[in-house]
Image 1: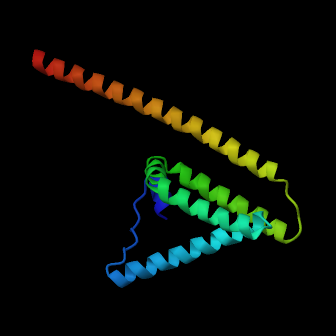
Image 2 (image 1 turned 90 degrees about the horizontal axis):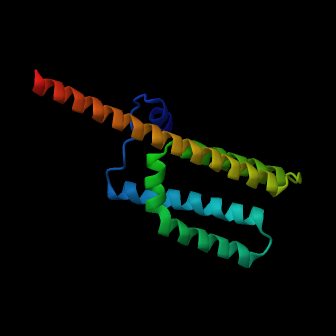
Image 3 (image 1 turned 180 degrees about the vertical axis):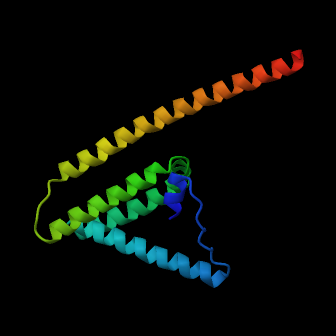
Length: 153
């Protein structure tokens, strides 16, 4: 609902954050378990060697810790990336379920779809940035013109 309201400009009630230390700890523990299980299931789905699975989990955790702030800020500035990320997670989930049912989907299709989607979204981000710059320039010029007219008259 929060994502929908951000993209569509509608107001929704925000979720109430936990107000106690125990609430924060429980929420943190639940999220850690969910993401750990997700990482393990993904690693098992993509690799056959235990060492590779363990390394994938450790490396992904390290990358997440190092880049979390920068990525979070980027996502906050570009909410459409949230939608794209959710779509990619859905696609990967479908591929993993299909493989679990012994239906092989070539990984190249998935990688192409992800790459193409990111390419299109990067173009959208650039276009919106340029449009925003033009809009600010026009607004500034109009404000200067109005100020000039007020000082004349």
